[in-house]
Length: 639
Image (cartoon, rainbow, N blue to C red):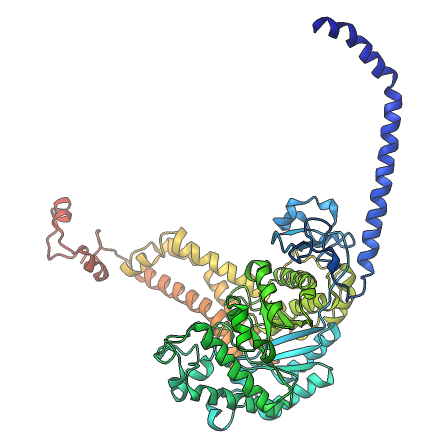
């Protein structure tokens, strides 16, 4: 072996040297060809992204797997998402964990996969636009002024919305036997007519929404209707076994239809019925029968009042029900479900088998995304990045699942929740969420979102003064920096929230220093009136400035909200968000002033507080006296 190597080795390297120039030439030619091919592919991708294809293209149903699924293992799905090579600044790789998995120079939009339920790059640029793009207005407990809603209606129409979903709850002017359901600051009958006229003027269809099963707190909280509760201690759910429950529903349906006219759709809620089958009447019955029979009864009430009105329901209570049971109750002829998921990963919450089941029952189906009110009960400005991902993933899913349904998807409702339920505090107010509403309405109306939509976004939000050159949602998820100079309805409050956010973080840091990091103004010091005046002064140096800033925020909030809401809503938002800061700062300053008044101090140890005595820690503990022989059981240290 070694002999052969020694004889042929030199000849091998001589051959390589002789052919070196030829190999180099072949390599250069091959590289040039590859670069040309890559350039052509990239150019086609850019051209397709600027010129979207028609919106009615679905997946080629002939290219399905044996299970009737789109083939995710082969060619990518035809939907365009967030960014492309025209707007690469939308997806800076350092801003998103999942994007780090792919090279930034791919410049591909990112979509979710039904099979893997993850995000991966797609190269095809076909898009899907839902036939109806409905914007949801949650009006419970925080009614915007009619004048403000008119401006917002005009805006969403300009951005591509086709209708509105109006959730009235206690803001409807209920009358007669159910007049107690209306809040004292509810809209008047004339207000409702003006709102509906504005929707009509903007060619927006109207879908009213009333709760008829779960989320009935606005009615069941009263003593008058407390006997209709499924659980006596909770006002959350209506008992479906009582005739009086259906009477209440009938009153609501009758009054809503009377004021709205014979609308094509009426949303009757029926989501999150947390308490069902618990009262003595309901306990013997299967939960699925209780739910479906009540939904069927509500649907018949709607049909009785308006034969051509189709009841819509939220889908979450149907997800685990068998298709055969739903068919038994004729759900396919009575209602249309609206499938709601507000998180980015939709298939995680509504997996593929649920879409198959729904397709075997319902010829038509709806979806629901969100533009606010989905990522935290006490948030005050929405994360546009997260909501955009949710909406774009819905478009991709609708494109995939549409062929399963005989009638396809009716449309998407972009929800904007004002409270998580009737008893919850306010989350993001409508003026704080207009940028998110605009971005997500544009995205669902065009089937994609990238730099080509900058002009309609800037125009719709009235960004005439220093308009942004891009919308870097990944690095500016709340869009404060990008859209802070725009003049959309409510822009003053939107900008105010950025200043409030800075103050809130500054106050939080200050309180952390007081309570946890420094040791002269803690509650222990305050309880025992024992500290160093010098150190207290040092800790309180920033307190007057922060207190003044917080009180100034109250005036600024009032100024920016009074054009949108009545004083009750303005006061509620301030009490929830700014007033706690003022109270805490006030207490810290008062505690500091009290500590500084003392000029002489007791000797240690301090008395044991009474709250600890129940744990067996009592003054005069023998072990304590052994260490401090000068103390007696009846002597208070320092007293």
